[in-house]
Length: 96
Image 1: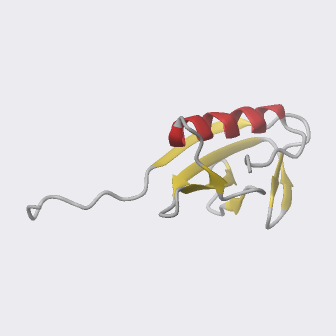
Image 2: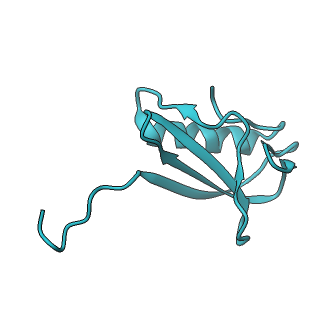
Image 3: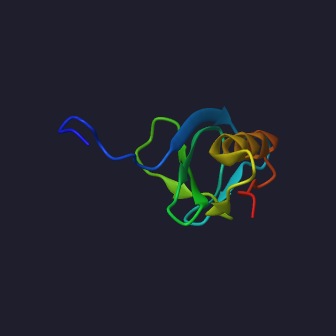
């Protein structure tokens, strides 16, 4: 490793989404609705943390069900599933 290299950090994917009717369920504040930002990040134990915030806000909340196991498609597949679930609404939770 040279002085300009940095060790790899956790992988993270982040996207904005509009929650469907009934929003997404969080551990800290219950249901959140409207325009949300979803972030999924790998953890060292082979799972991924799923966080949600109101788009443009500073506070992040844990999506109920997080951390989630990584599916065969890895973080991109999990992130896509979470986005789909939040778009559907109904108190969406992370896959378990």
